[in-house]
Amino acid sequence: MVRFTFCGVAALACLAAVSAFSSAKALMVAPSPLPNRVAGAKVILVGKVTKIEEKTVMAVPYKGAKEKVEYKIAVVKVEENVAGVKGLTEAKIGFIAPPMGGGKPIRPFRGVVLAEGQEACFFLQPHPEEAFYLINMAQETLDKKAQDFDKQLTEVKKCVKLLEKPLDGLKSKDKDERFTTAGLLLARYRTYRGTGGANPKQEGIDAEESKLIMQALAEADWGPQRDFNKLNATQMFYQLGATKEDGWEPPKTPEERKKILELMQKWVKDNADKYRIKKFVEDDGKK
Image (tube, rainbow, N blue to C red; front, side, top):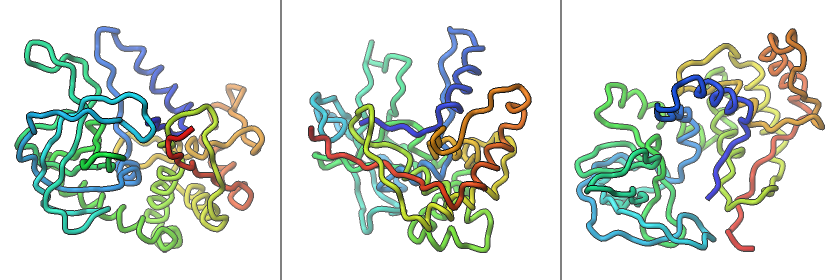
């Protein structure tokens, strides 16, 4: 399954920074903001891995895939159903089996490897055909042993609540709630989770909702953001996918580049009533 957001320029900036390091060092990818992980998950659970099943499962990685991959299955005792399900006491989570060498995973391995005894909050997707949930990246877990776990879980629950009634969040008297709700919706709408294609189908969201998201973004703090767990106004701007046809052109002169954040914010404010945010329409994998 292809999954990407319209944050092209920001991504290029990150790659440029990475290139400054020695090629011998592993590529470190910054985790998505916590609200993005919440918005992208269909099911969120807190639990403990009680065992890793010996038998692996060959299954498609996404609906419509032609090739199957090997999955290891973790059995998780569910301590808390945070979102997407109710009353679940045990869950099976599939993760792609890492390539092995000498009895150990061959490094580097970009996927997630779950282990018996691991306790975490898991951000999951139901498998399209099999009776287990999917997890693909290490950032789709929050380690329960981390010092800030309780704080992060509280934030996760806050985001889940905002997504339950997004219009209430966008109209909240609290500026941070409006901004967080806007970020959650942008992450949900502007992340493509289909099966590929150069021109994935998109359609405009509700006009009022679009305007409220734009207004929340326009009034946000556009300063530098170094906490990767938090939403970033610049990243959210690139998620919009604005183009020249929409009246947005990247700065060309050195003077304009110095004021790029100011120009972005001004465009969002000026176009809150005009620009209609679009969402990706997930296909069913059929041709």
